[in-house]
Image: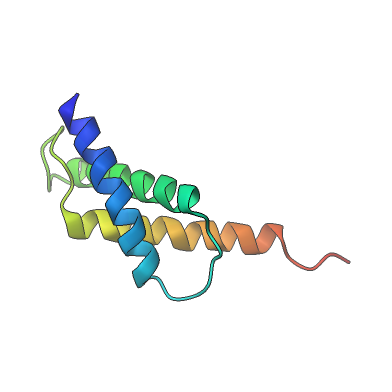
Length: 88
């Protein structure tokens, strides 16, 4: 239970850090930034456990969580740009 709460808390902070580090202007709101940060933190946590870097249930390292969040921000911006592309 505390692992999930810790990952959520770290994810909120990491989302804002990743947003500040990622170049470009995505025009994301506060809530979407927080959601992508939490998702990136969970992504880093489970990917690290799958690769053997963390034990299952350990909170992901801060740097790994930031990297996971930046990856998700890039993916989100790619999807957003394709869906809002010029219409013919």
